[in-house]
Image 1 (cartoon, one colour):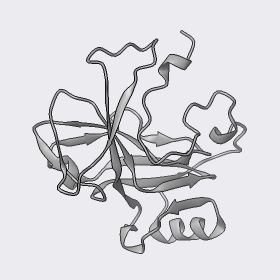
Image 2 (cartoon, helix red, strand yellow):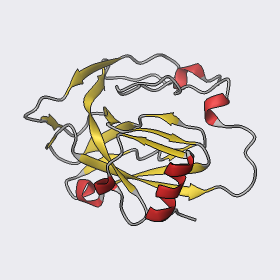
Image 3 (cartoon, rainbow, N blue to C red):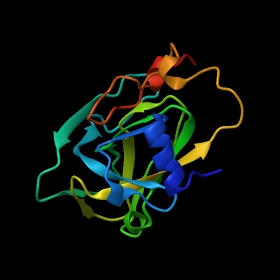
Image 4 (cartoon, rainbow, N blue to C red):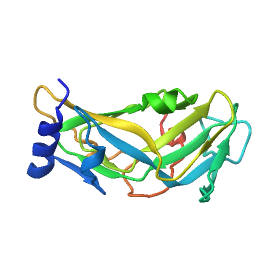
Length: 178
């Protein structure tokens, strides 16, 4: 079940959801709009290796915006830091963003219960498009969890994305054993 706007506010008041900064104008009927943060990143190599640490170059989006090009993976980050301690947060791109040919997080839309951080966005585009820091980029939906939770994300020993950051984070697949 998806939380309504009033339920999201109740969960914020109870401490089960944290959104920093919080802006009432970003609260929708059953979601919260998040914004593109100041930083983007691109992988240094044209060929990525799932078993290796693929390094990134991080840069600040200029005030006049930055043009994204097809065929590249851009890593963005939400302006908002979130904590979700009793729900699954689900991130979707805004339809207005999709209509510009921008896709975010095609594969990693759900944040486990206990995810406490900004959201790294895997961004790709269908044609060149200019983006700006602080532009609305996605919306968070909060789903109720049925049953007790035994393995909160922020307490897992092998959690890879728990260090608080305001910059995009590259893939940590290389830390998995396979």
